[in-house]
Image 1: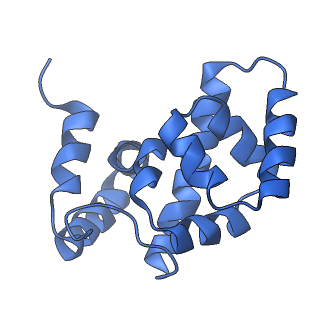
Image 2 (image 1 turned 135 degrees about the horizontal axis):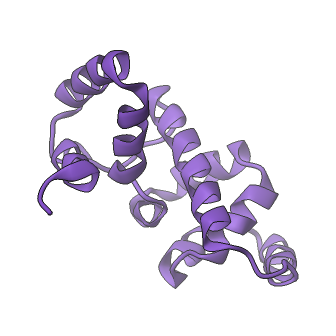
Length: 138
């Protein structure tokens, strides 16, 4: 009942970036699946609320709109608004209409879409195009 992937993710979120990168690289060599599970729990879709407008816009340019719609279907109002605030009024209206027209989705599909977006966000963060949270986030 103690420890596990979520606990490891919380610890990694409090670790300095250099140490985190070193640990994750070494873990990736030993157990890539475990590394991915920890990363999936380190930064969740809801953490995107704390990303600046420029970062959200970069992410939106690098993610398929259909994938974003599915991910936002199960997101909190704060997370949805973070993306909507970075769309033009016209684009926001069209996006909302398209999102509402989606059929009911399984939660597993929504979570998978959110994980795909977070993996893309991590890649953008690694390349310096996007600033994610963590111990060094200000």
